[in-house]
Length: 157
Image (tube, rainbow, N blue to C red; front, side, top):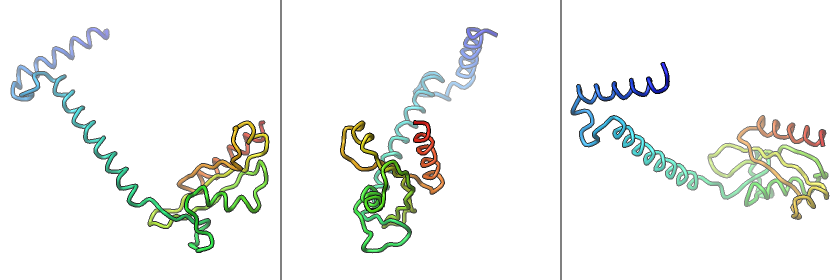
């Protein structure tokens, strides 16, 4: 069957359905109009649910971050970036890639940062004076995978 023949067969089936079930699409007229209506309603519901998820995430957004699994006052920071900086400022070497555990002062689970200390050449290429870059991951395994990828990149370059 050609695409045109399939389209004609689908149209014929829709017409037969509408003829045999005249009350199925009251207010919509055709199967296509009803499908468009259902899709629009689902899109609205998805948008509403996404907004609700965003609202709920803000309710549990942490205000305090800690390096490692312990909640010690001396390691309390205002952001994940501050934790990374705290750890790297003492013994980070240019070009080094490190995985850092970051605990959050909420019921949310720990996150893991894969952080790289930038070399002077990398800072110049980026056009800023930031000392490091990092990505956050939900598991230590994901952070380690990112670290391995960055180290392979370093080896290739």
